[in-house]
Amino acid sequence: MKIKTGDKVMVVTGHYKGTIGEVKAVSTKSNRVIVEGVNMIKKSLKPNQANPDGGVVEQEAPISASNVMLYDSKAKKAGRVGYKGVGSEKVRINKKSGAEVKEGKK
Image (cartoon, rainbow, N blue to C red; front, top):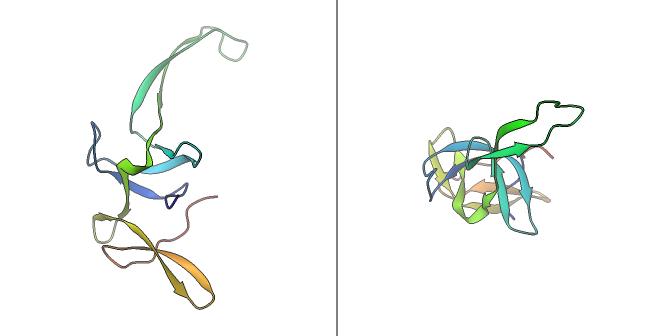
């Protein structure tokens, strides 16, 4: 998968189309990503020692990785991810702007 945790992405299809957010988690097995502030759901929590009242919590749910594109904040455009050899290492680039993508958080 070319999208990594910590990348800034734009949602290109669906209810949250046009929304820009940071990737919080990536699941390569199911090809899904969790983007900050996108696909919000309400989840009921049972009471426990940490949360004695229980209640309803709003959190992000995963969306398909095919519904997001890497966002370049300088060019203000979303583009596909490509790879380019620089010396002996391989770096990710934004194909639309040609800018190098700094690595996300591990």
